[in-house]
Image (cartoon, one colour):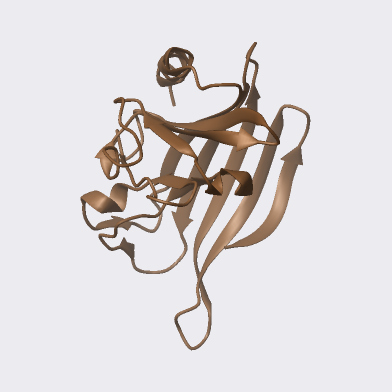
Length: 191
């Protein structure tokens, strides 16, 4: 994935363009152009932003995404989380019972410099195959939303593949009720 250009950057909004390159070919070939729109969301206790990802296939044929056990939009926690990060999904699952289950949101938290903190990622109900499966790594502080777990799909030229996510960073223990409320508000947003 290569950064192509930033279209807009202000206090409340950043729009940037990325290019996905297939480097398995003899000559690396661009296959997708992706635009990220990141918008600040005011919140009283968390640092929140929304991300809208719009991917456009720029080849003549559809881009085939094969069934796989992880991929797509991911979160990697702080290096300090390596020894003892906790994970929780909207369905109440931890990193063991929640691996590959579907969830509206997932969160990762742990201790950094003696204080508990974390981040939650929320998938929008209009996303493809929502609620999407979330692979929760058994050891590393990492999880992602991965619709390819449920099988192969294609991104067709001329048909934008749009995904919406909300991210919320928090200090202190995670408050599942507050994240549920954040998801409810996010889910009410129209396209």
